[in-house]
Amino acid sequence: MTENDFSTKAGDRIAKFLARAGVCSRRDAEKLIAEGRVQVDGQTLDTPAFKVTGDEDIRVDGARVGQIGQTKLWRYHKPDGLVTTHKDPQERRTVFDALPSSMPRVISVGRLDLTTEGLLLLTNNGALARHMELPTTGWLRRYRVRAYGRVGQKQLDSLSEGVSIDGIDYGPIKATLDSQQGSNAWVTIAIREGKNREVREVMRHLGLTVNRLIRLSYGPFQLGSLPKGAVEEVPSKTLREQLGKKLSAQLGL
Image (cartoon, rainbow, N blue to C red):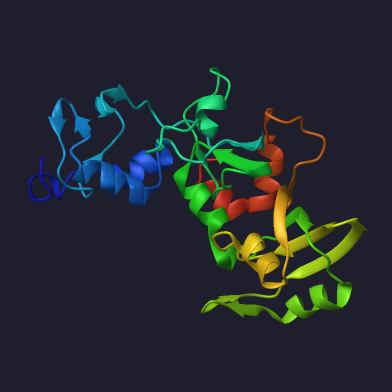
């Protein structure tokens, strides 16, 4: 099925539909289509521009994708040792392997690397995930860090204006020394950008080696007392309050 054949068909583009259905991000959906892994009514797609209404038999790798339901968000306390991906080339256990079987198909809001613990947000709506990940959203991410080495508050304060490391510019970072226990320092860090391995790279820049990293919060959503490995849905009312009326309506909340 090609774009030219169905350019006037009503509905959403298949890549957008798959993202909203929580299958994967729109970009990853485009990759799945290019690899010939998406079928509609038994025919393999070759363009992400093909439109669907949701009434079709839509399949990814042979698995049926259902109707888009109400937008939902979950808090998950990620243990270390899990990768945040749906399919790992090294066949390591993933976050999605560890979720309860009662959970619908979801995607993560951003990622936590293999050894990072703490709050990971999950949603069944790709548009919501993209909104929450955007730097322009400006939501603060807070981490508790244990790092090998010694550091003073003055060094940590130097991060408040941002720092450039190996050609990568990191924005302002608020860092507080909580304690120095022997050769290990405990530090609380707050960032807004969330670049790849940002906390670890910044600590390395200060001569510290991170040996434990826990995300405490993502914007207004807190890890709190959620047990390790547990998942809990964010009440729809709370989600609407945080997103605002306009965005909530767009996302079907």
